[in-house]
Figure 1 (tube, rainbow, N blue to C red):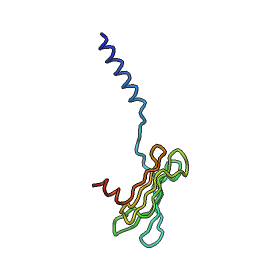
Figure 2 (figure 1 turned 180 degrees about the vertical axis):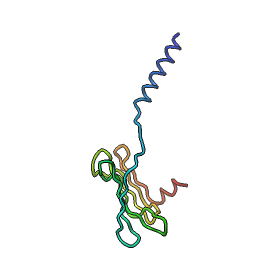
Figure 3 (figure 1 turned 30 degrees about the vertical axis):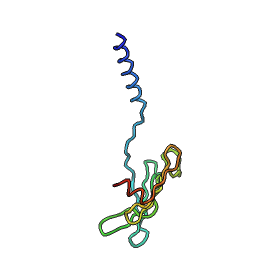
Figure 4 (figure 1 turned 90 degrees about the vertical axis):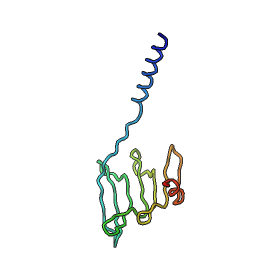
Length: 117
């Protein structure tokens, strides 16, 4: 009888914990692209309120558009607070800096290459 009660209590605790987890959904954002010069384009991603949630630049290489320059990802909770910064050179990621649990985490091109291999 104790085993049955223990199993029921464990099941209730696990179910309650699952309900407490945060749901994360991938939202589509409006993308605004502006031609700067030659093969360079500015891009901004806007949320439903019109706030910029991400911005960066694209480099056009034939039919392809490649991330280029500095890209910034902003906090959804605090306007204009940068949470991630990445740099690219014509599609090749050079660096990334992001905050995880309030601490700055950085990776350079060599660290990124090692992680992707």
